[in-house]
Length: 217
Image (cartoon, rainbow, N blue to C red):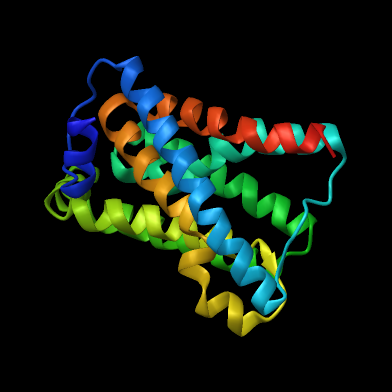
């Protein structure tokens, strides 16, 4: 565990190495313990501020598809795919963003459509004015900021899954999204050291706990 913890304290741009299964188990256990502990605090805040966790408005089997397959793939590509700024990752990232824009248009989620469109055109603008290698060098030189930003933004996005007092959600957003922030750090470590496929698989493994709750409702 010293190697992963050292990396999370000082993340660096690195090449992929051979996965160590014992690290996956240790990191999985670390996340579960952290999530349970943080969930107690979140439960107290929700009771105090009358907040509720919004349910996904899908059938059971569509929830399973969304939680176990679609969410891990799309979220890993969006939040951690471009931590390694390679051509294949850029193509994958753009494909996922375009698909999400199309889905959001179909669902009439105007804010999401506008936000993703701005992000997409900003990325395309960067690719027009700068080469991929120059952007990659910039990310590598400032990597810790990109690493922490991806993990924190991943958690804060999940804070929007709560409904109720908007001001309370904003005030406690870092706490409401804290389990996902912890998960973001762990997934970031896995993504950078072992590759995007392994961070997706680890994300799927974590989401099994969500699927368990769906089956037992």
